[in-house]
Amino acid sequence: MILKSITTLAFVAAFAAPALAQTDVVCDAAALTKAEQQISQINDGAKKIESAKELAMAKDAMTANDLEKCKSHLGNAIKGMDAM
Image (cartoon, rainbow, N blue to C red; front, side, top):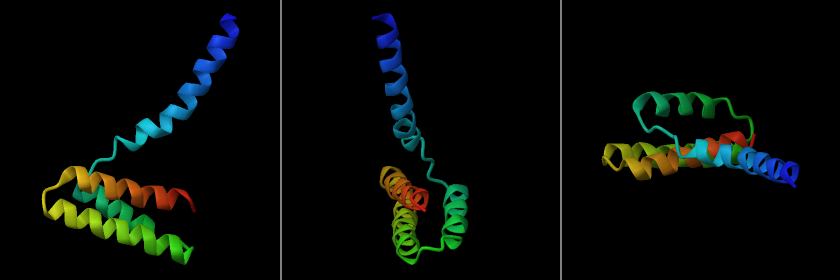
């Protein structure tokens, strides 16, 4: 019984870690520059276009000082890159 509980907790922790890491997106000039460099290296045209659109929206949000929106769009751009 204890082994089953520990196993279940291990699986939950393994799947929760990537979701929690996504909330740690920092929206600053360095993060945007890094994402821009990574997007330039994407070979898949559709993924590159979508990530570039999300990055542009993140930059616009940062300019408007809307950090939550910036984090959201930057996170989406990063997710698009991860799907490479």
